[in-house]
Image (cartoon, rainbow, N blue to C red; front, side, top):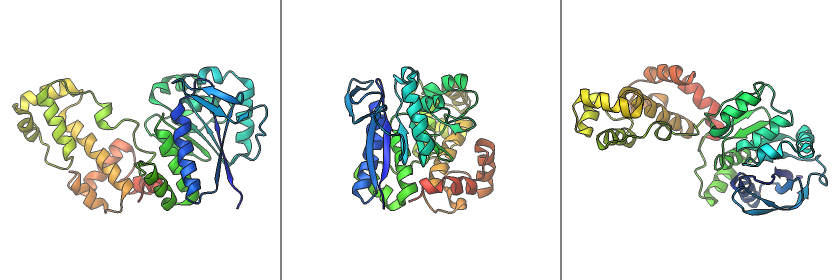
Amino acid sequence: MSQRRIVFVIFDGFQPLDLVGPHEVFQYAAGLGGDYTCEVVAPRAGGVRSSSGLLVHAGHAVADLDPGGVDTLVVAGGQGVDHAREDTALVGWIAGAAAGARRVASVCSGVFLLAAAGLLKGRRVTTHWSREGQLTREHPEIGTDCAPIFIRDGRIWTSAGVTAGMDLALALVEDDLGRDVAHAAARELVLFLRRPGSQAQFSVAMAARQPATDPVRAAVAAVHADPGARHSIADLAAHAGLSPRHLQRRFTGEMGVPPATYVERVRVEAAQRSLAEGDEPVEAIARRHGFATAETLRRTFHRRLGVAPSDYRARFRSTASP
């Protein structure tokens, strides 16, 4: 079997983890029997300085490397991407390499280079959350969705920033070689393998406001400690040491949503993980995460995510199952 050429594109000011993380995933997979060979290309060969100052050696310049024969093209992002996408030689090389590649991927703001190369019209893509507004304004022809950590749309794969590139690379390895090799690579790298692409760039805890006082902090901690426990306003008030009415007012003011809404968000997120990571029946997942019945879970999923729990599992199981 011929080797699969994985070609990484970098430029001055690229984010080093956008390269190093996915590169290490493919290299470990190659050591486990995967048929990968990794190359790095840049506007010029030799030292390329990353956004953090780390100097990385690019083995090839775009002017010297034939864009043909690339199996998987992976384009890094970083602070220098806005300047890089003005480099017509680089953008043209990406377009040429992508034309014949089996698949094309970007990490973080590398999606802007794919857009500049004309590869994303009509596609659904993601990028780092801080670049969502810019991508939407500059490329209305693209369906930008910065909720997931990575998205596959046909042969185009895009991911959020930094560590999400490793999740993307593991999904690519699994797509090629199966779960066992991807799991072994993740284990060697001490990574959490089963973070599905559907997972939000921010968990509920990160996306929400942070509690400003100890009573509300105690109530929030109780919800995250056991999403499936009883979390009525009376239960949460007991954790907070406040009256139910007082907690309702304080919680909503500090967190931006009422307690019941926050509890539901945390439970949905927990149920998403369970559906994506295991074989537990939907009914059992519903009960364990506080939804009482599968029907209640189904209605909540439809309202919040637009899909049924069974459809969610079917959609994301391929990159989320043990």
